[in-house]
Image (spheres, rainbow, N blue to C red):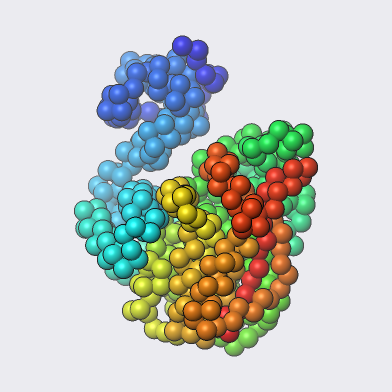
Amino acid sequence: METKGKNRKVTGRGIMVALDMKRRIRSLRNSAGLTIDSLADKAAVSEKTLKKIENPKSRQKRFDEDTLIKIANAFDISLDELQGKQDQYKKQGLSISFEFLADRFREIDRMLLPLIRDHRHAGKSLIEHAYIGLLSQLLQERKINLEHIDRSLRDPIERKSFIEGLPKPGLVVEVSEDFSEISYNCSLNEKMIVKSPQLLWDCHCDTPSNKQNNFKCPIHSKKLGEEVGRRFSTGYVLIRYRDTEFYWRRGQELWPPSIDSFYMIDAMEADGLFKKKYNSVLDIGSGTGFLGIMMAYYNPYITDITLSDWLFTPYLYGIANWFLNRKNRNHISFKANTALFTKGLDSLIKPYDIAICNPPYLPLLEGFDEIGLESTVAGTDLLADVISKNKSLANRIYLQFSSLSKPEAQIAQEKAGVKLRPIGKERLVPFRVRILWERSDYLDVLVKERGLIEKKDSRHRFWHKLQTYIIE
């Protein structure tokens, strides 16, 4: 077999691979039915390096973090899981350690995703009951108590320990206020700048068209492009925008604040949202918490913020990002909530003054049910649910969605007897959902029936329109 990658001598740096970690890797490989050759091929690492890692008598004790991340990814686990850090956290009693909870919540989310993402055949009511039941079961099995986490984080010492325990980001992404420039910082001396970006990650290299390859990639055409790409794809990332910063790590469970989020902030600010006397804000489908936290950060009248999502990875990142940005806002009451659609919001004090929602927008079209299982941006259920519940959730609701889901929004507003009033500019942005590049049949339907715009002579092949609305 041809070995892949280059061996790098690691002296005084890298990650120590102790005997128990060597045994864990060997056990995982055997359980997966992989030989050293096949694991090296799957992980795209050197076979020679992998043999050294597994060999208990190897003189090399430290190995490059990138190599170990690739091995962990081949097993579909985190580097922390590969190192067995969960056991360390248990011994130390760190029940609210970010990394410990991140690993546990990702396990739970991976079990929830296939159950929830496509409920056409089971029915919405049945799925809601199944979600609540499975959620309770998975938390109990992992001995995770959400009330305990909430109580612990109210303690200043516990909260300080939680924030200080956040893993060091391998990449800091600084976004200019007008989105005219993005700086990707690997270290103090290693910085890559992209001018006039069209997306947070403005790469078109994998676009399914030969014509797009004729354009220079703003990222991979630069010296640091490959290294920045590796860090953006595999490690912890800190995204800075204005005076705020948001922690994120790539995964199926969580999308970063991106072009749609930045444009929605612009639209709401232009509508005067940051200056009006609103006290409470609810962010529905909150993800990293970007929209709700930005509202609480820039509107001086906010005293109550709730972030709500149906997965636990966003729940955790929302908590971390709130405390990263809270600073002198100790007077604000904060709550992180888990809810499928808007069902789990019933126990909250409502209506809020403001609700914000930037929901998934890919329509689940007839014959393409599996799309719902492949992407967290698939499904228009939350969009329709927020429109139908409208005033029971908040006195004023800001909602942004893609032109691709306009038919579902129109049906929902007609049923609810409300009007969607556009605010701010309609934005034409690149449509880049990588898992769909192999689904040309689905893309064809979006072009023919949903107004997905195809520009064969543009750097990005597909485009769609984003608009922010107020429900009236």
